[in-house]
Amino acid sequence: MAVRHFALAALLGLTLAACEEDRYRGSARHNIPIPSATYTLMAEKGMSKSQPILIRSYKKESELEIWKKRADGKYALLKTFPMCRWSGQLGPKVREGDRMAPEGFYAITPAQMNPNSSYYVSFNMGYPNAYDRAHGRTGAHLMVHGACSSAGCYSMTDDQIGEIYALVREAHNGGQRAVQMQALPFRMTPENLAKHRLDPNIGFWKNLKEGSDFFEVAKDEPSVSVAGGRYAFNRDGSQVDPSLTQALAEKRQRDEIQVAALVSKGTPAIKLIYDDGDQHSSFKRLLAQSGADSMNRSVAWASRDVGISRVDSLIGPRVVVLDDKGRAKATVRAESAEHEAVIAAVSGSAQQAEAETKAAAVPAKPAAQPAAKPSTDAATQVAKATPGAAAAAPIQTASAEPAQPSFYQRALSFVPLLGASSEAKEQAPVASVVPETPQTVTAPLPPRRASTLRTSQLRQPDAAYASQPALR
Image (cartoon, rainbow, N blue to C red; front, side):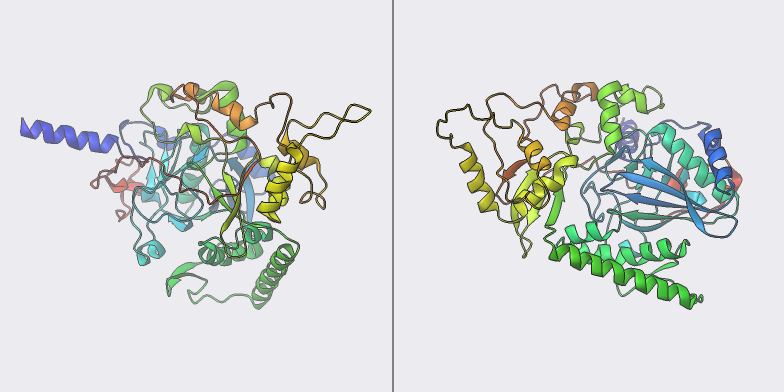
């Protein structure tokens, strides 16, 4: 009886592994073909299936890019995939169970490929890498997989991950020993760096930008090592072309000048607080229109116990506007198209915005002619203001009629469709300006993974894959 209970507990532990379940062994998914349309695209761009690839992912933009080498030895963008789900916040993964998707430079070897994943197919990113271990970070089995649900992984639809998996597999078969994955918090633009300049992770992100810059200038992957607790790039003894070194220095200087110019023009420092990660806007529309089953081909996906991503967190991040000392000055919950105008309205002074809001609510004196009806949508009114006048425009909150629900509020009506409670969580109004210190967002942690589960234990269909060294 004791043996039976132990076996049952061990099986339960395996099935609860958040990103690396293995309940559907015996599948033949390893040989998923590359779609014919992608073959056509590769031919148009002078690429072949066996040439090396490189992966870049961006949390904030919820996108994943596949780059592929051409005959001239330079990488070119093959496809950009909208990301179906990632969990946690911007920033690196630190500990097991924190729901954070890793950020950094990772290598995907043949031994990390898993065609038997419960989430259709998947591959292990290789977290923790040497940098993560140097900083004492914990966690394992951080994957790129299907099923559009995440507890620390990067999740795609099943069709997407099938195509990505096939591209990685063919690059391995063509002789690429490890596919580099650059997992970034956002696109390393001057605008993003200016906005996130006071984030506690900015030093780490600038270190990632060094490797990102090299790739963007050289169109080749940087060699990656760790020195002094930092990522070090191209220190493997190989000679770097002096003209490339000069071009790289010029790019960094241009970016720094643009960041300084944006700050001097009043670009506010912000911090994004997600309820539990995010997904590309195209999937929010698809979920609302067709439901979760439209995005996945796994067996009975809708009835599976995936319950990982919080479906009530699909309304986008709160934008916390910071003062020069990094303290919260105002919090904005607005639709993405309205972020810039609303942030501009509160970046000058939260107190001024509050005073203007109160003033706008005071009834005007009776006039001979009827006064124009005030706008019922504060965010729309601010968004229509010119950039120069946005900070001074009153944010009217009084309305004679109920405002139309925003896209994110409408999205919440589909929570029952995704298998969540039918009680919609009450949300702050769109474009609400709240001069307060934001509270810490507490998200439920996923079940702890079984410590005995390792990707190297998975049965590989090809001898070439099975001969690879086990993961650590």
